[in-house]
Length: 484
Image 1 (cartoon, rainbow, N blue to C red):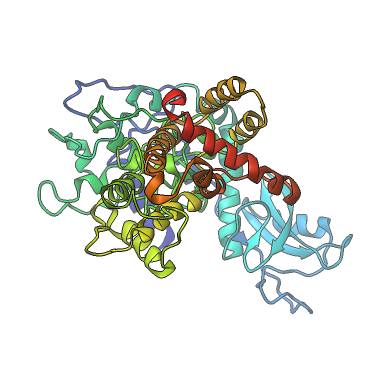
Image 2 (tube, rainbow, N blue to C red; image 1 turned 30 degrees about the horizontal axis):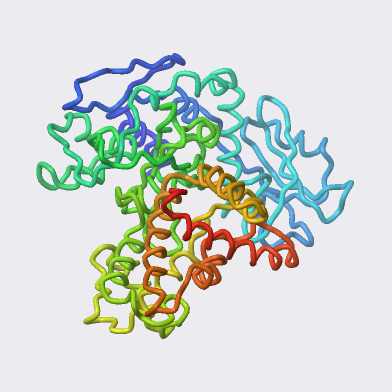
């Protein structure tokens, strides 16, 4: 199939679910809460991408000595800018590669755009690049470059105003509910970008919904904790046409057209990502594990106050281990602790940590401590860490308690709830000190470095902080009923 025919088919497919809107404003259709209708996607930038010049390789007719093996016939050797300009004057989108006369050993991509030749320093490290994006071939690099140049030249003012009237504000971003009620899907959601028909009336419906639609169809759950969470955006290459779920505009280019939240799947332009509120609602299909997962991400994905690891391990420990000598101080067998971790990662809330599977309670305490150590952001966060250390240094007990109380306010809600639940549990552990020989000071030694880690401090300062970490946890346990 010829390139023009492929483009025609792509445009036809896109037209099936795109409303062609050239204005910077978008009509927002409001329906009742029982039925969701997707927003009207703006296609102006998609139209511009279709109009962008196509790459035209200007080949060298003679053999060039010392041509780098990763360049083809578009390499012309050491020619001047004037010669390159003359060769490229044949058409828009023409390109060649030359070796720099000023800096031999460096290479320049010369590209015809806007009736003038533009020169870009060209690099190769296994992939070709002139900026942040890396490409498998020079042809792809030039194609993407021409699209970007054309759109940013033709629509500079439009792009600058993209974030002014976002659909994100109108559609809303509701609390995640594990059982979303799709009462009567709108007919428009039946359209599929690839033209394939769904298997059966409801088969695969949720998979076809974008993350924006998924969020809009979820029922508000007033009992769910309203924890604020920053989106975990990462640069992403989208296959096929995609539209930004913040501004509703087309995401242009061949690769790395925008960013995708690794936790909830939200797709937006890189510039739009700076405007998105901190309201990420993680989707379980994006949260692949329990251990080493951000604490807030995990609780929001499971719609709970605290991580299930904390709840399940503490319940198990309190049911059969509070009187165990050296509780939390004595280590369990490391291979079995790793087995508990893998069980949570694999089975989540269905993990079996009962006495029938793990008779030694120290395996469960070890798994709980490992969960806290593996957190990318500790329970006592890096931001709050200095305030807790400062509080521990205060000699006057009342002042120390007041400072700790203020420091606790700095913790994100999920971290605060987890710490509160853990301290209440550790308080109950100390109430059995006669049997388990574990008092608040001993538990502070165990949990100090587990719950708080120094943020980028030098080794000596971090070492000096260990005693203050112990004092923080010890004070939190002893005054749990006052501080929380």
